Every structure is written in structure tokens, then in C-alpha cells.
Amino acid sequence: MTIKRNFLFQLLLVAALAMAACSEDVDDGNGNMGGGNEGDKPATEDIVDKVSQYEARAFDGEKRAGVFYEIFVRSFADSDGDGVGDLNGITAKLDYLDDLGVSGIWLTPIHPSDSYHGYDVIDYKGIKAEYGTMEDFEKLIAEAHKRDIRVILDYVLNHSSKLNPWFKEACADVNSPYRKFYNFTKEDREGWHGWHKVTTGGVQYWYFGDFDSSMPDLNYGPAASCATNPTFLALTDAAKFWIDKGVDGFRLDAVKHIYDNQTSNENPTFLNTFYTTLNQYFQGKSALGYKDLYMVGECWMGTADMAKYYKGLPALFDFTAWENWMLYAIKNSHAKWFPKDILGAQAEYKKYRSDYIHATKLSNHDEHRARTALGGSNALSLERAKMAGAILLTSAGSPFIYYGEEIGMMGDKSTGDENVREPMLWAPKAEDTYRTTWMKAKNNFDLGPGTVKTLAEDAKSIYNVYRKFMRLRNTYPALASGSMELPEGFSDSDTNNKQVMVFYRTAASERLLVVHNVSETQSTHTVRHAIKAPVADMNGVKVESKSATEHVLTMPAYSSIIIEL
View: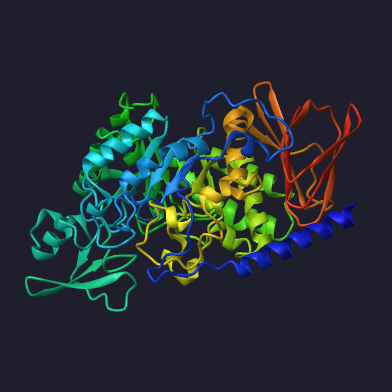
């Protein structure tokens, strides 16, 4: 049986690879590929339920899981045909996000800037004209809130644009009050990292811009007294402006760079002051009834160093869990220790904040796309990408999904950041009125990976796997916010069945067993205690009960099962 299944799986891989090789779309000369129908309607319930052979508890409509979805605004949905994604495009796709099970959206910078990506802010209270008007933004907020979807904005605290009026005035006049918003010196900084020349009043100065000369770093003075600093007051004033517009929170960019010493207490001290100031202002303002402002930081560090930033912020992205643990587990069929690593990280976080929010993720706009990181564009990478999504949506944490991850979009960061920020594929091109065209896609076309519309019609597609597991996470409190535990008798030294990941999720009286086979070969796992019933599976897991307290799971390649205990 095992040999036959493995052989069949290999045949399917070969067939899929051949199909991918023969299905290149033809470029129309404008950087667009393929044709087909507008894909705005979600998959029907019978299709998404066919992901699993088992019957889960009916979803009652409450989105318990708090799953966020990152939108690279320029690439997501174009409502006016100018080739650039915009706010009205996002509003038009809120029903899609709501159906998928999304509870919040993170918008990459929407402020006026001199770049396509927006991380060089010219006006912290403005909206980039290509993206729409303030009225468009207010409509987006209102429509998102109608669907119980929170909206958080990317907020760049480390630096501004060199075209920001603050910096332009600071460069023009050494006596300008904005001079102190930045770091200037007359001392020679030739050859020093991050220092750039500027002339003021005929005198040569140097200013600090860690990332680029176009992005001068902001200066908040000593962290302990930042609350009275004019730069701090200007940035919090702008953030309050957006809170008054209905924003539910912020994603803070590059928080470890605000002060140069990344491992000192300066950044956590500053962040705590920033968060506390805005959270106090937020009280009583939530249209959705949330008590606290949502604020998550990008802190690209190892677990122990990153954990210290919980002294400043309630939520932080966990880069290590994806880059070091899950990628390794899936690519090496070595998954047994992933749950232990997650629990170890959470123990570190708890040292600094008892109510920490563990923001889990696969890729984002600064990393290789998940499917690419898992092997490229072949059938094997697609099965691995489904597995990554299933693990993310069943393990502990508060998940973020990067747009297009649910359709298996691909992209290699090493060939340019824009290549992991390609246009979202809503439907085959001939009918895709929302597809952006601001850049020529290199990795994602109609038949590879596919579009929302075409994938929604396939019960085994990655889209329907994401939709099914998001539905499960929203349905079962144990998956949404329950504790995570290792299986009985877990041993570091036992390397048997290392390709199988096993853990429990528990909330109140609800207890679930989750098992993933992360390899391309069939495996078995024996459950040695009573079970109620399987809740859901992926790729056809067979449950054979030998007795009331012994159940053998036969798990095909890249399969998952959730069992209620």
C-alpha cells in the first residue's frame, strides 16, 4: 500500500511539472499574461468542504482567530484602471477577505512618498494620490468595520523621506526647529556607514540615514525622555490623526533601528512610551469595541533578543519560526521539534510581557515568497506550501498571511524586492478588471500559480486549503487561541517518525490533537488514548481504531489531521 501511494504521488508530481512546463501564458506586450474570467466570487461551501473527508463543527460566523492579512497596496486591486492598486480596490475585495476568514488587514504605507514601496514618507497625515483620497480611505474603514475587519497602517518611525518638508527645511536652515528632527554633524563622516553629505548655508554637514541617503533617520533624543521630544510629538500627533479616522492599530517598521544600539533598552523604552501614549488616546474610540490599540513591531532578530522588545510592544513578528524552524522542518522532512521550538519561544516572550501577542507568519513583502522558499514553482513546492499554510493555521500564535500566499504566488527576493510584490491574480487576465499592471510579472501568471477564480473551483487547491483551515481556526476556540502542548512522552533523543509533527491545542473543555506529515512519503502515527472523532484532514488521512485507546493514523505525503478528544 505504501509503495503504491508513494509511486502514485511521484506520478502526480511529474504530471504537474509537465503541465506547468507546457502552460506558459503568452505576454501581450504590456507585461500581462493569459486570459479568462473575473474571479470575485468565493468558492462554494461544498467545494471548500471537500478539502476534508471529515465533517467539522458548523461555522457560526464568529471570526475567533484574529487572522491578519498583509496587503501590498500597489499590487492588490486596481479599481480605476490606471494599473496601480488603490484603496477602492481593497474596499471592493473586502467580501473576498471576509469570506476567507480575515479579521484584520495591514496596509503597507499609503502616505505620499517618492518610491513605489512607500517606506520614505513625505507627509505622515496624507494619502498617496495614486491610492485615492481621504474620502476613499474613510469608506474603506467603514466598510471593513461592517465586516468586523480591523485596519492597521504601516507606520515608519525610523526615518522619513528626504522630500519630507521637515527635512527640506532642516537642510535649508541650521536654525530651523526641524533641524533637531534629524541627526546632523559638521564632523567628517567620509566612509562611515549611513552618513551622507549635505550643504547648509555654504557649509558642509553630514546627516545620518541608515538605510539610504533618501531616508534620513529621525532623532527622538534620549529614549528615557522621548515623550517631550518634538519629533516624538509630531509622530504621535500624526498617529492620533489616523486613530481619529478609525484606524485600529499600526505595524511599526524597523523598530530595532530607531536607536543605534539594537540590544540596549533604548528601543524598548521608546516603544513602550510610544505605545502607551497612543493606547491611552485610543481608549473608547474603537468602532469594533476593542479595548486596546493593536500595535505590532517588525523586529528581525533571534528569539532571545527579539523577546526583550515585548517590554515595549504588545505584539512582534516572529521571523525565526518561519525562517529557521518551519522552513527547515518541511524542506528536510524533520518536523518533530517545531512545536517544542514554538513553546520555547513563547516562554521567552512571557519573561517580558504576560499578555504578549505572538505574531506568526510565513513570508512577507521583504522575504522570498513562501512557495519559492519551499522549492520554487514545481508540484512539490506547491504541496509544501499547502503544508506550511496548514501548520501556520493550526499552531499557536496570531497568524498573518501575505497577500497571494493563499493562491501560491511565487517570488525571489534576491532578484529584487519588487519580485515578491507582484500583482495579485484575481481571475484569468481577459476578465481580471482588478489586476494591477504597474510592473511586469516575472513569476506569477494565470496558469502558474493560478488565479483566485480558477483555484476556487478546485477542492484540492492551495486556496481552498487556506480557506478550509482558516474556517477551522475561526470555528474552534482551541485552534484560535488555545494553549499548545507537546505529546505525552515527547523526547528530544527519540528520532523515530521525525517527519510527523504532533501537538495538542486546548481551550477550556475543548481539546484537539493536530498531526502533520511534512514529508513526501507516507507515514503512520499511533494515538494511544481515547478520541471523539476526526474534525478535518488534508490529503486523505485514514483513522483505524484498534481499541478505545489505540488508533492508527495512516498519513499520505503532506497530509494533516485534526482530531477532537
